Amino acid sequence: MKHAIQAVLTVETPAKQSKLAEEVVLHIAGKPLWGKEAVITGFSDDGRPQVSIEVRFDKEADAIDLFDYIKERIEKIPILTGSVTRHLCYHDETPSRKCEPLFSWYAKE
Image (cartoon, rainbow, N blue to C red; front, side, top):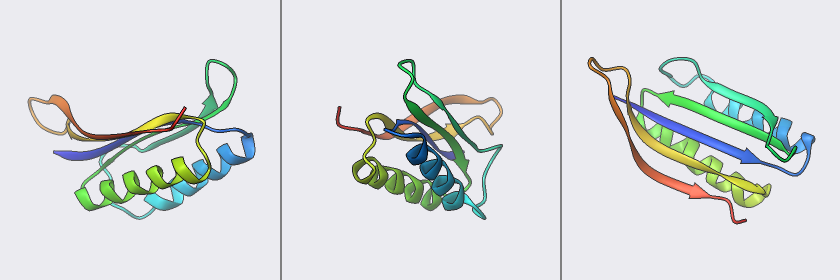
């Protein structure tokens, strides 16, 4: 079992997008991960800057830390739209099982 964080966050400007992506990469640096982390910049359907995040941690404390960090960023940047979810991930098990959502946090729209 692994501890996963998934988020899709839309921001106001490309500068905020770059800064958020860089901060997330720095925040997970050196922590034991399972699989390849994904911190991807792009654009929402309506053309606004967006950051997509998917990370699976070996340790629950690391997932909680990133979840709390992203929740804080949602309030302070501010994030225009988006969410962050923490869940248990069983893709490392045989047979693999469906993920189990634990907590979600949404940007105020």
